[in-house]
Image (tube, rainbow, N blue to C red):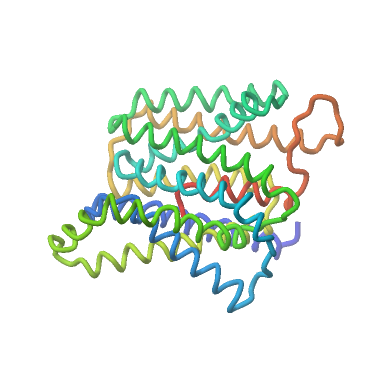
Length: 336
């Protein structure tokens, strides 16, 4: 690999890590330090910022070409994904309100397992035994982390766990509903974020409107807090833009490994800021989970290199363009 290509890959990964960790920490800061305990409204702000950002990138600056989707397909294909996408983001923010970032990020690493199980149960899809074997350390690490979590909260745990199911459902829907459309991360946000804003706007207003008004009156500096909240929305959109850059600057294997290392970075940074207690066995469980996720990504990559039509081999992306819809949806969890 050329020196310039290596530098570009490293730069892409670092800016992706930076946006990702910053968004997660800011969301936790909003819920814990600003006492803005309204996850629906925070998610809605993120969707609004992402809708505006995607429109500016595609329509105004023309940095990305618009992928034209038929009006019928927008409702038949994209709206169902947007609904699940919305649930996924809300559950991620709800879990951040009740459990530490380290625990939430570890649970989100359970997504490969829920994806495989859902495809096996619902779609009757066959998976190589190596795929199932790679899930053992993921499940074992999650169980160890959950049992030894010192700040365990059942509601936050369930929100994060169901968020994994929503992420898996979204990934599977992307594979089937977006067939024929080679979406990138910006076009995905361009079409899905407005739908998500529409879906979430009224519930956020009805369920959290009065609470926000009370918070606004009681908070010593509400306008400064609102700037932070909207800044997190802007950074969430920047994160989506950075995903496209990192996918095109690295290989699928590098992206997988970097994604798992990103979780470790988020856990470390969150501990340095919030100082949530982490036991030794809890850290070991988190490490086992990340190793399992890396092994899972490696196995999927090895199977994807097999000749198409190999008997009883699961269909996996064979290049980065095919990987885009799956990775985009998988890596947007809790960040838009």
